Length: 251
Image (cartoon, rainbow, N blue to C red; front, top):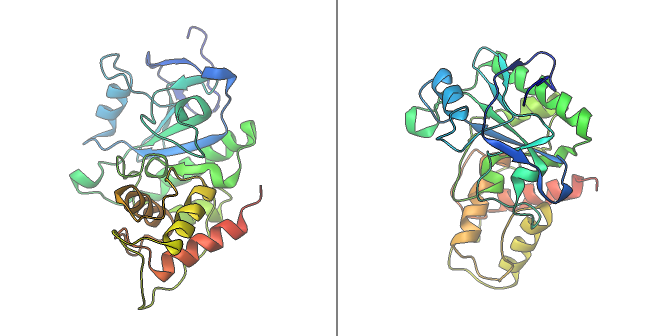
């Protein structure tokens, strides 16, 4: 990538060798947010630029808000892995990936500094403007890879991004005692739940059986949209929050 000019003018350029052309003439129509899950930002930056890692992202955002661009937005970074959204399984070819420096759940999982989040917001705004990305297509890695990934996690401040015009969110419905759909359940209510999740974009089979895949998707949904309790059961709060999200989508 000789002559690399950053898509984001404020970003430092550090070119990763781990990229390729977007496939099937696809262009970016979503943003996928990750955390690095490594002890230091410097270590994560080095790993994303190491050909041995075979991973990369378009951007890395350090705790102090410093932004590094590693792959051009016109190219395909290797950040999403095995994933899906609305039936598309090559998420790398239709997304811009942003890695946010945070050690993650296995290393204490601290909160995200406000300077870092402000930088993420500014970066996302630029990407959204350049590629006309819909609000509901600013997603977590856990959304596109439920059960396999849990980042950027329940501490990520989606509400702060939404207030700044980035992403899609509704107030989570209140949590009350009552019946919940859970693993092992089956029937029309489970089928309706799976249909709503699939309609929003999650990769879930509409089988009418609350299986392990459905539980993983519910956990991913809760982690993003109802993080107060992440247990993989579809209580009334989870279902009503999902209904509110679907009602507010502009497609």
